[in-house]
Each structure stands twice: as C-alpha cells, then as structure tokens.
Length: 203
Image (cartoon, rainbow, N blue to C red):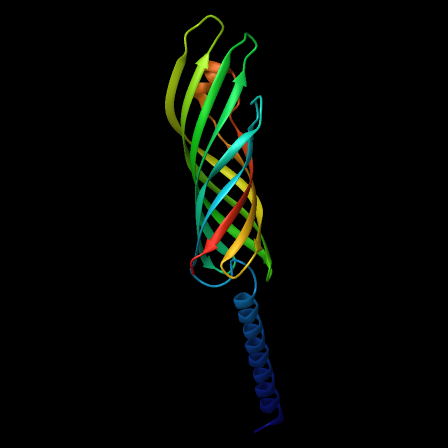
C-alpha cells in the first residue's frame, strides 16, 4: 500500500470518528436536555392569567386547558382551549361585552433546550367562537353570536418542577379581525394574553 493510500485511509478514519463522536454528543444532548426532550412526549395541563384587547377598557382573566405533543427534541404542537371576556366603551355612551372562546393550534420550536429550563417560540391559528352584547344610549340590547379564525404568535418558558410536572410561562398576541363587530363598535379586537400554566407529562 502506498503512502498516499495510507494517508487517504487515515483521513477517512478520522472523519468517521469525528462524525461518530459528534453524533454521540448530539444524541446525548438531545436525550438529556430540555423539557421537550425525547421523541413523542405528551403533556396535559391548565393555564390562567391576564388578557387585554387593543381597544378594551380593562384587562381580564383568561383560563383554560392545553395538550402538547412533542414530536422531536426541538419541535412540538399544542392544542389550547380558553375563555375570557372583554368590555368596551364608545364615544356616545355605548357599552359592549364580548365573551370569547378561542381554540388554538400552535407549532412550537424549542431553540434552546436546557435540563431545567426550555425557551420556546410558537405560531399558529385558531377558531374564536364569541357571544357579543351591545347597547347604545337609549337603545335596546343587541346580541350577536358567531366565530372567526385568527392567527397568533408568541413565546414562553417551561420550568421543570419534577420528572412529571413543569411550570409554563406563556405570552402571545392574537390577530383577531371581526369585521362584523368592528362595524358596530368601531373597535379593534386584536388581543394579547399572558398566562401561567401547570403541565403534567404523561410520557
């Protein structure tokens, strides 16, 4: 065997070793790090917090439940159902109450998985069922029931409490365009939410 062939074989072996070491290190990091670590994990949980619409008079309580499916170490999906109420005032003593029931689906990306803490960003869409009641000065009550699709984006942090439970801090902004209600009130119904959740890891 010539010296050139031997040098070529040594280079190939070194490359293979580097790839094997890198793969092993990556696999160890993936299996040990992050609350989203592991393939096919399922979490169930509850959440509660504050929400406020762009033109709402007050911030209000929002609460609900969620389920997360972790597909791979850095990627998951979430289904979340919530409920909240917002109040609005108009320039001519109009008053309006909007009760909203959003069901949101989100794709979650965990760019920085850590053993006790995981940061994520999310985006998705959902269907918002609503009950709307509106009263202007000297007029009767008007009730409207309907639904609207809306996109959302946000970010959050998962904090491990134990092997089975973790705390969740979540913030998101929802682009809710309800033209029918905007025509009545002249209001913008985009809203934000900031919630604290408790999740239970099933597997």
